[in-house]
Image 1 (cartoon, each protein chain N blue to C red):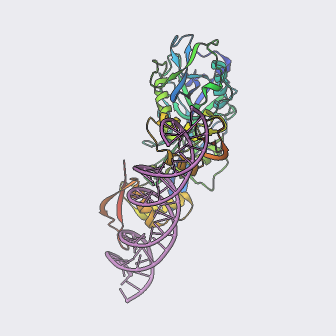
Image 2 (image 1 turned 135 degrees about the horizontal axis):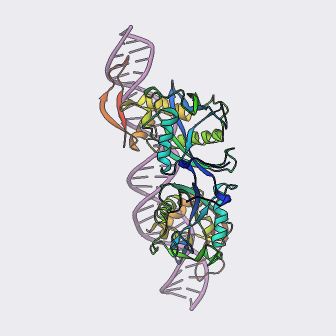
Image 3 (image 1 turned 180 degrees about the horizontal axis):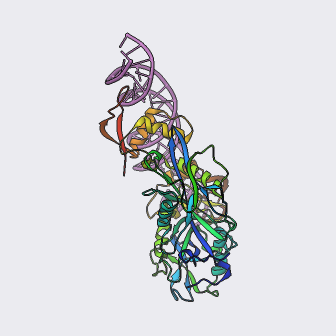
Length: 216
Length: 216
DNA sequence: ACAAAAGTGTTGCATATACACCCATGG
DNA sequence: CCATGGGTGTATATGCAACACTTTTGT
């Protein structure tokens, strides 16, 4: 059935993903560069329309594949953006997601039908973003900081087995502050975020680290 | 500009509110009875379309006034529902809110252009609801239980000054379990949910209670 | 003086923080 | 044998849970 009431006709439901990784101990976010209007030649977070036959989670998955060639990304919704003028085209709300992956283990597309470029950006060197994506990105960073001690949100940032020093550096760079190594280990173990595997690192120039895995 | 792509044409953005109160120590939720199809004669949570010139918060406010005559309600978003078939009319997502008020201090409309009845229902005596509102309501109750010890979500359930025994009974009825009075007081004070006012209850058939107020 | 309801304080346990020393490996 | 980096344990402070007696007021 067609919606005719001009009060709520031509509304769009968009999904948008703040996808993070770390490289050399620095947090980066994945951005794409638009090919078309609006915001032609602007960098933005990956996103797009939710189709009528999809729920928003599925739309996010599809968009990620179409606009960046990335599959099997895990993410979680964290907010909704709905200012009437946030898109110049038509009324459009955004369901915002957050995800974290290991950039070295995925290959993304530099160009698609709708994008002319794509890349990882240091979060303190972000270009001017289109739409309200600046605000969404800031909120996502906030959210990420809150989640790392309560959830396994960083699960896909590491291989199945990883060492505690690796994880420790990552936490310090996300939170941008020093954390005591000993308390860090105890805290993550006790809250069942990570699990000891009994294995040891093989290659090492020093004492081999224990290998851990994420719970869940 | 008109959206023409059939993949994402005719999408609706709805807002929906799980509004709670307590009466005689029992938790109730506010429901309205629909006058028209779809779900004619069914009870549902208050909600409706978000217009093009509104953000979702404003839409929620307006809908609450139009469908129930209620103004100045505070609420917070807690989830999004987007299964493609959740509305039989067209593709429609719901931004879900939660709110808590004192039913004795507001007057609602029993009938409006779109509703034929409205009332407070005990949460363990809920009729079959239209749409997916059963699920939304269950999630809202979950959310409420999680929030009461961390936020002032119950602020509008009480007058400006209230006694601790009043609050205590309310918590017990929301959580559906007994809570130690002494620990309860200490916990809420320490977490800055409530503040001592120095005042005492005036009318009392026994030892007068201290009066507290919510923080924020 | 007693019944009814409100107030308060102490102890133990669990969780978080602060902090310093030992161990394994490679050169 | 030493430099590097990884592992561990203890002591203190803070937050939560369990628990019983005292105070005020009206009758």
